[in-house]
Image (cartoon, rainbow, N blue to C red; front, side):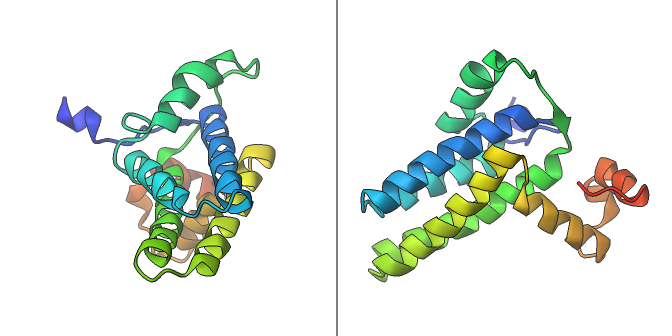
Length: 164
């Protein structure tokens, strides 16, 4: 049971990923526009939960996978999981740093800048299906930083000239 609890899905439903990204955009915008930088901690928790368990321990992940995505007419579109997990890790790094900037160093402006970057990346994912973290993962695979065995499906795509 714990193995499944602390595992990231592979493949991932791209539709649910885009719904999660839309939720991140919404919370990020509320934090910035409403001047509520403490929401960076809420976002950081969500990213940590998704990196560790996929949608299992993430309230936003649960809403996306169980309630919203199944009701979208497009149906599921499966993509490799490792690039999505990497993208969640990038989100965790941004929101974790934003949280430190706010709670530890009291640098509200730096918190808002990082949240703004997150909103831009999440907007690209939710509106256009362009996963910036996945693209970075692809570049790292091509450079040999990420070994092919991390994502066999991705390395097969890479060998055919397509990116993840």
